[in-house]
Amino acid sequence: METNRIIQGDALTELQKLPASIAQSIIADPPYFNVLEDEAWDTQWKTAADYLAWCDAWVAESMRVLRDDGLAFIFGQLGKREHTFLHLMSRLSQQHQFHDLIIWDRAVGYDERRDSFTPQYEMILVLRKGDNVKFNKDAVRIPYDAATIELYLRDKRYKDKVARRAHLESGKFATNILRVPSLKGISKEKCGHPSQKPLGLIEKLIACSTDAGDLVIDPFLGSGTTAAAAMRLQRRWIGIEANAEYVRIAKQRVKNP
Ligand SMILES: C[S@@+](CC[C@H](N)C(=O)[O-])C[C@H]1O[C@@H](n2cnc3c(N)ncnc32)[C@H](O)[C@@H]1O
Image (cartoon, rainbow, N blue to C red):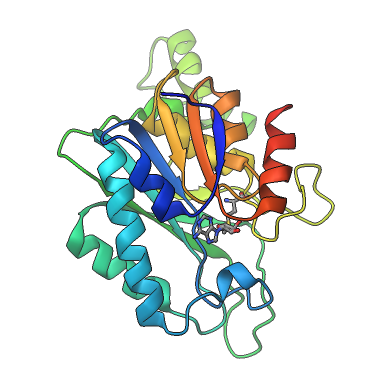
């Protein structure tokens, strides 16, 4: 099957055409439902019930194309008082096997709410298909700063300082709170999509859940972040995107990931 390609079309229709159990990981950053109120693609559904029913359908197809040891990462954004994603997480966890709930800490707030704390995170629901998932904890480590390494080296329990330093310099396992700064308007990475995700975040999701050569599928490719991240990590990929302009941007992007 041809990989490393962008399919312009509807996610549900195009997922239905793909064979079962081909993807090691699914990275899905779908429309959020009336969070980005100026975007036609986020306001396509009359009611939350319509949106949730549509999500049931494309997630079921995503799980069909996922391998038994694969993971599906499903982004959700809570904006203002919109809370549909909470219902979505609950019902998807009833329909499929829950694996984890990752917090993407965007490092800075993104909304000007006067009556509550400024929102700073997004959630990523992680679903599994079977009990034995491929997951490489070593692939995503967070470096210690130099002062912390020097402090920990003073711990007298560790006699072999060379081995201890090498261990500390490899960093610590990442937690399920992933802190990756969101993209600013002036960011070099920005390429014209209103909800473009940082490459560094998508790379972490791909690195922990796949090996080189594995296939990653993104049903809502947008500006092509998943494709670029997959190429940088030598993974194969397929991306689906409905909007012709975003397809154009993504095609341009994958020429120089
Ligand atoms: C949240 S954005 C994805 C952004 C992407 N992660 C990135 O980093 O650029 C959701 C995308 O889904 C696309 N979309 C909306 N409805 C779709 C559908 N039915 N099938 C495929 N793509 C769709 C929108 O055009 C939009 O680009």
